[in-house]
Length: 225
Image (cartoon, rainbow, N blue to C red; front, side, top):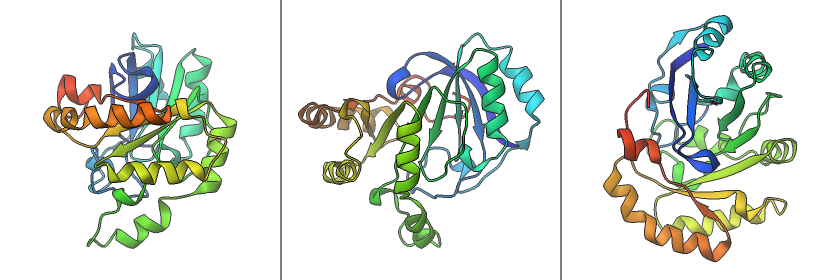
């Protein structure tokens, strides 16, 4: 499979923020968010072909029990299914990070879904129409959130985005508020911190959570962290 990077670090976002974690990042994505923080897997995809066995061998050297399968969009890759199953057999606690537009029957302890809302659309680019046509798949979201434990992470750029989150959640009444995380949009510490106060206030009102982007705070917006 086409792999962008493999590394051991800490989880930066969501339920397991701060937990030592190994990451396997696939390259390739069916969306093109303007704020994508891994453009080397989407706008300018790059990577190397890796065998299943080579990935398992590298993962076996990690101290971390948690493993994140991420991208790009990892669920585009059929080989992600046997990879997740083999990792599960070895005792890994697996999180799959996805935009929620593709379904595969992977082995996952947590489905970490980042729905791409209208604020993600790359306007005035050749990808604008394709992105908008692909970013919302209600059928996939329902399967992912009923067949797996889940969290939903929404990237918030401005207070106007909060109304959009509320409208989105109304479409899926089975979703639990405490599994909803708001994350500030930004790739530097100053931008992230400037948004945290009003994000936290908004989340409290709705019973939602606020997620740090701990990897950016610790390492900056760099690969392999």
